[in-house]
Length: 113
Image (cartoon, rainbow, N blue to C red; front, side):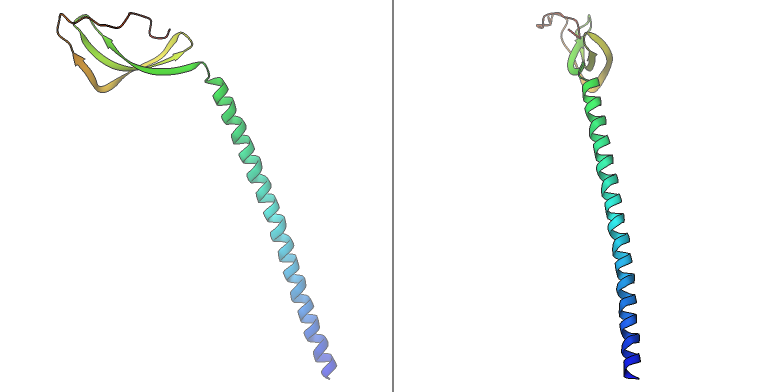
């Protein structure tokens, strides 16, 4: 009788080990799949970022004050593509009213030169 009990316990142990091994294999395969997906997504994101940088190489922006004939000057953000103005946005609160005899010391030039 003792031999049968020993065999049953041995069989249960082997069964538990087999279940554990199956779970370990499934976990390993899942980890490999998830890692592969993460690497693929990271690679795609890096490639897309590089394309955006190349496409925007001709764009630049800067700020400058634009003055009218009564010497009221308002700061603007100017966005250019090569020599063309793409956008011109007022900077809120950045303005000054100079006296009527004030002369702008800057040399005149196009905004996107």
